[in-house]
Amino acid sequence: MYTRKNQRDLTRTEKNRLVGALLELKRSGRYDEFVTLHGQYYVTDDEPGPRVGHMTPSFFPWHRRFLLEFERALQAVDPGVSVPYWDWTKDNTPAASLWAEDFLGGNGRAGDQKVMTGPFAHATGNWEIRASVSDGAYLTRNFGRPSAPVSLPTRQDVAKALSDPLYDAAPWNSTATKGFRNKIEGWGRPGGTATAFNHNRVHRWVGGVMLGAASPNDPVFWLHHAFMDLLWDRWQQAHPSSGYLPREKLTGSDPQRGRVFSLDEPMPPWNVPPAQLLDHSRIYRYT
Image (cartoon, rainbow, N blue to C red):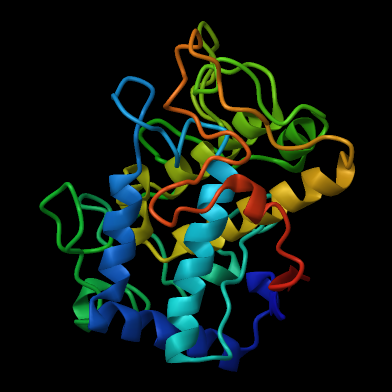
């Protein structure tokens, strides 16, 4: 049993150890394998085949296992390291502690959005972007997207999603208008004015490489998804009589059959069903 802390509560030593483990994972090539894996399982509504990582009920359990695998890789470097979480409802400005030069570094510069500060700046020689759909070799960020401003989600936005007692609902994709899953994952509603909520809105606020399927290229990805995992935990506690949906494999007449993973259907690439990822309490806890 270990603890995932709020990033604002990390000591200087804990920050240094986490940064050191991230850099070693990058040096070994393992970090880029995780980036590639995330991109491989970023399948949209419009693409054919199973949809396990995004726009789907298994968004939460799939990313829980993804984070666990990443965390185990970090702990193979330093057993005392865990993934902290970023509560962006509180630490919601570029001056927040996670963007300090001794931790994740700050915003990208005007023009090319190149991050110039911190241990993951390209100038340090330790963080070259390799697993990407673009040609850029450096980490990029564009806080708040000044050309078309976007703000981080609020506590009220999160509370609204947490209040929904339904986990997910048909059509089990990015257009679902009911259920906690899409209200947190945050895909826009058809005909609506907003195009991104909660999880997705955070990706847009950070900008740069966080915008695409290769978003784990920015180390803040892991802190963001640790907070997603914590919010799933809070939803479970708030609605103990509710659970993961769909419980049963979709029927042959359902257009999402074979694309969406029900409670006991094994998820690639680990061959583990959502049912085995509903409870993390024997592995880690949050503070």
